[in-house]
Image (cartoon, rainbow, N blue to C red; front, top):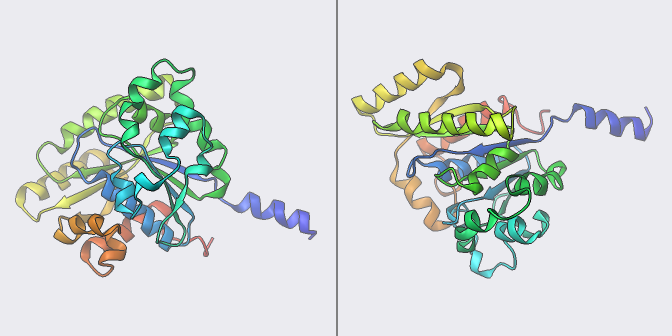
Length: 272
């Protein structure tokens, strides 16, 4: 086989990059923690992973040890000033894991984008320019259906929903599914929820009831691993690390690794 034919063959075998929006319109459900930890776990499996922080709070950025005040450009510059996405990507302390950080400038982006041409497609076009450099692009969306989240849902080809194991979990999920339906009708017809993860489980009867009800409603979309509520998970972001690095042998870290394996089909990049 010639060198050219071999290159073509390898390209054909390589799975298409997956763009996954991590979303839930209910705040405080562990969405950002899940985004960065799943990203870190996929990186451990030797996939190249880019996390894009679309939340003005910038928690995904700080949770991976990035100080956005020291940066020349962020995702705000990509969406509002036409900066190339590759120019704002930062490496993290974890091999194969990169982030396009956010800062408080992004707080006004929903309003600023209103008057822009192609405002819902800004992120999608930016990702298209760099997509061949990564196996996974994970989008940490804000807990609202503003233009930042719409950009994320328009760019993504699937949605990952973290659900806190509490009473109002299904209500928040219902709101998100209605929003996904509206976006898919107008902007992204192939968009669908691919995975639902049960997180912040407290080993109470109520939490177990939520787990059972979610599994009954959504079947195989629900990840088998359940992530427990943990003080160590809450501490990890203050050290600029996901739980898989901060406390790699903890129950929560092991659960997130299992979720990453479910997303990737149980294989590492090397095994493909």
